[in-house]
Length: 164
Image (tube, rainbow, N blue to C red; front, side, top):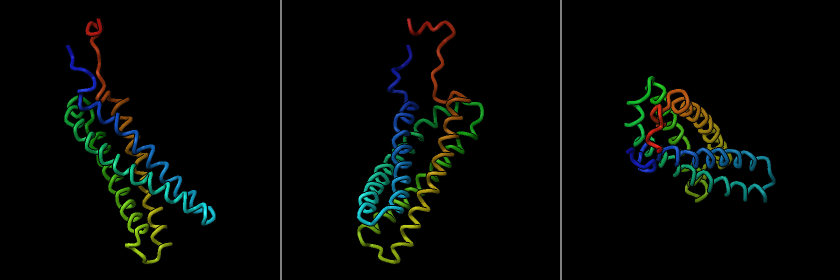
């Protein structure tokens, strides 16, 4: 009898990966919208974007951890492990990029960095847009691993006897 689905470590990654996808994408969108608003409204949207960025970055690190757990199982079952390695590489690039943006944003909001705040906010936006690009490509590669190579997917026997 196969082990329960929840205890398969390769299943933990898809459970955690969707949080940073949503949170970090919305953080980028919200921070971009805040640029075009009046200062009174922009402050609220900047704070909301910062909250999304911080929680999304923490969730991204959790997803990297669960992805490392899944790697040992999935890499042995797929036909082209280079796609999995590229997925891992771009996910790490994305996570480091958003982490840099989060630390820079935190430093600006706490007053640790007062050097040209407009330039720093532009740099944060640039990191967010770059990170979102890495996020999109890492997601595309992850989808290729799952849907083209059945990475982490349980394939039942031909007669489905294990479900009787």
